[in-house]
Length: 437
Image 1 (cartoon, rainbow, N blue to C red):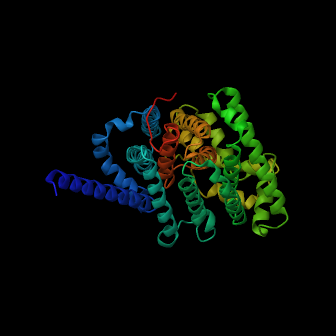
Image 2: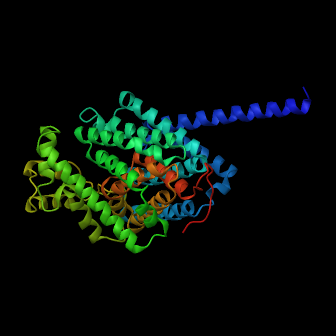
């Protein structure tokens, strides 16, 4: 064989081997994202790996971060961290609390930027990493089960992972043919019903809404609506549409659960949480009654990492005057269970902990989600079903879920998907970077 040809073959073999090793590494990173060790709170194995490899990745791929949204996350993330540091120093937070608070933000940002450099330009890499996450998630309940897994294994174990796995299969099977999505409507509806039945209401609702929006997105009306740029009227319409769909899901769920189809426990829980003037959503997130007064009393400067002030938990008693059927003893337990200022919300938690700049970060992320959703439905790129689900889930988390622990890595992946969808060039599998505003 000609020496030059032989050398070329050897180089191709080396490149092929390196590519396979890289893919295996991504897969293992996905698996390790599901397991943690207790160091300054819960640190996940992949977070530690990302922290070590970030300087290397940055040195080798500095141009990868030349994206307007990556830069915005960098700027707003830095301001969030700076505000948290200043707030903790002003409030005199304990060393343990401030260490956990600062570490949470730092590891989240390092994980995102590392994952962005590794994944954002290649659709196949995103799928490999997500597959690793799913495999790790399926093993986690057996190796490192969460606190609530034993009582609700679907909601706090298999449900979110199997839903993500189903969406990954949809993304992988689409292959540029959006008509194939029709076949997945019924399986997603069935998966949604199973989640409702097993008391994972939010997962069930978002899976159901994803299936509906997946079909609606292919209509001519949706194409015309999303063809032009985002305007305030469109945003208002989308918000009203989402509220309407969510209200419809809640009412349907209420009718079904009151008939006892989802069991007696679900029926009692629903009746208690939906009995008051603000209905099920607020009744299921009573922490908002303590969060809002805390923010109103100090809207600019936060209260510090793991902010504590027992007076704000006393606001729970207001539920009794709003028609909710919570027992006095249950509220007394919730109030005395902790001194933490209630904050079951990304937005409110970081507003309370870090001040206004902590909230500003999540407002900016909300805009990114909206932009990505518009772009994905407009082009129907291969990630658009995943973007719809992540957008619904992320909107809920920003308003109604606490931030921290495994949520840091969840967000690192979601942000990569949102930005990648924004920079996707239609009719190719190539990801290109271009300026978005």
